[in-house]
Amino acid sequence: MHFRPWFETGSSMSTVQIIQPRHMIQPRSIRGRFRNLKTGVMVLAYWVYFLLPWLRWTRGNGVDQAILFDINQRRYYLFDLVMYPQDVFWLTAFLFLAAVLLFFITTLLGRVFCGYFCFQTLWTDAFRWIERLVQGDQVARVRLNKAPWGREKLFKLGLTHVLWLLLAFWTGLTFTLYWADAPTLVHDFFTGQADVAAYVTTFLLMATTYLAAAWIREFVCLHICPYSRFQSVMFDRDTLVVAYDYNRGEGDSGRAKAGKGLRDRAVRREQGHGDCIDCGLCVQVCPTGIDIRNGLQINCIHCALCIDACDSIMERQGWERGLIRYSSENELGGGKTRFFKLRTIGYGMATLLAAVYLVWSLGHTVLLEANAQQVRNPLFVTLSDGAIQNSYEIKINNKTLTAGRYRLSLQELDQAVLDLGHQESGSLAVEPDSSLRLLARVKMNAAVAAGNHDFHFLLEPLTGESREPVLIPAQFIGP
Image 1 (cartoon, one colour):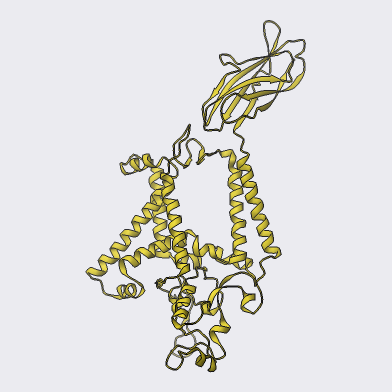
Image 2: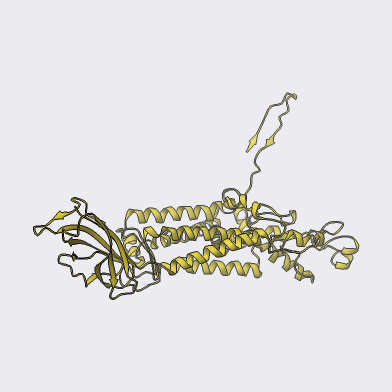
């Protein structure tokens, strides 16, 4: 974008460039330990994401799918764990844990989440792998883009986008499978019998995945993602980042190419040159197009591909690796990296406490819930024999995956009689992951029923997974 203002300087016109135009980056592929680590993380993440909806899990009730978010039944199944809407505090605890863990890792290791685990990174890597498989490496891709339109260019670009769209569609459909029985939904989806929400969700995720990983790519990291903007407040001189050893690489006279007379390290040092031979490979492999030799930059996602590139050059020269490496500002300056500080200890303690609380709350899940709601219209009824009767609506919620039998009785209410109608108080059956509603009537002799009496219903498990009795608070109202 250009802004062309007129100046009163004769017929000349000055041009002020506001935004530097930029083409999509075509990074060069590289082999190395960090590239292998990134590939391993990507493969593992794809296996988990795409295969989990198809993992079967036998339950006493509900769909036999390991992970299922059943909106219609308001149930969320994670293997043997069943979550209900009232368990939303687990989600809150998990999100808090994820946040403080991210802060803790960022304080120690910089933006390694961006470089290895971010969804944008994982899907962009996969899309670039497809692009490289069809079109070739960096030089071949650049040549293909500059070539005039013809049969080869049309075929390769068309095949690339078809494969991208297939992966994007698979991504969107897989996300949808987490919300219904996977085999059933796939059948209904391709036969036109699925709900409209399934099609909308799938194609919306397909479109956003294709747009972000095929077209926007590094611009998500450069201009859209907020993490790069606030990460700097978590960095300090002891944070390990991908860094260029300036003193070793530049020397006193700066970097120099390994041309004639400068291939020998001793000669280079005599002339004041550092170990950087200015090959530019670290820039060519960078997915965001930065030059790490210019220092730490907000656009660096710490993927460490520049380390692999530089190490390969150093090995070829016969010099030690590490000209570009994970290091801290203190270490590069000749000091030591201090990991145990108030900031890291604080984030670490917060992460530990959040993890302990989440595990503890999951381990102490209440498997049997019950409550009593008094029927207040009327508050009490006087029977023909003079006895006073109160009515209660009792709800028993069996959160286990096995059926259970329970006994209901009264406590702290002398001379009272419990009447459950056609139900037997000693044999209340509740199906797995189900609820039972029943009407309970409590009768008391008029002589002792005057006033209000606090008491409890006692619900005792007879069979099933839950063995802890439940006390249900209630109140008997008399004349």
